[in-house]
Image (cartoon, rainbow, N blue to C red; front, side, top):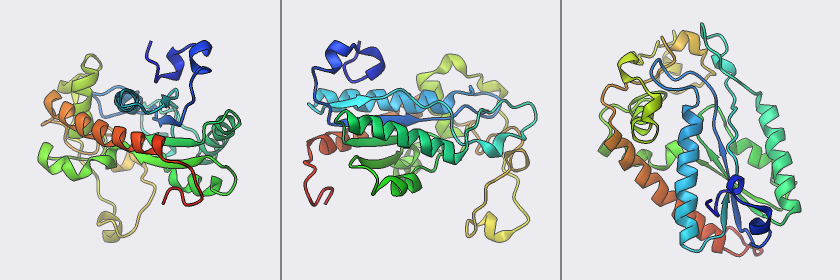
Length: 256
């Protein structure tokens, strides 16, 4: 058993502690090119959460990893031929967060990190929604942004989905579920609008039109070594934040 993982611990142990921070991972169940498992986002975010909470806990922070939310907002995957993406609507995910925040607040846990592993889960608007409705401090960590400044030092051609980055993490932490030889090149079909292609205007991309087999980015250069390097950076940065957050008093100027 790991004392920082709620699902593994007993009531006798959990009630004997004063928990300062809860970490709630969010993933998704969706296709990842032809070579990665549907649960890729869940496997990644849970591994990051476990390692970061372990490091923070060993440093004295009373942090607790909650069970991973395995379903995300995948509405733009639903027309991919042959796919079995399991999607919830944004408002459904908001209600789940609201209910869990109320549960934590009732039981005295007043700091919650929403650890996100899926680009479709845009969680920050929901922290604004709840800002004046709860005393729980809410913050969002999109793990894939946490080490983006280091990508040029690690990866040859980072993409977005089932790419070199995600495939490297898969090769490092769940290699038995990957079949790299099946991967396509992850080419992206441009829209007919320059403003969208250059990022000046954003849309919800219909995945069946934007991609060939749901990959965005070529995974060919992926290695387990790159996955381990990325994990080390993310865990170091996230665990340091968790230690600081756990120690910070929630006074009248918090978090400033």
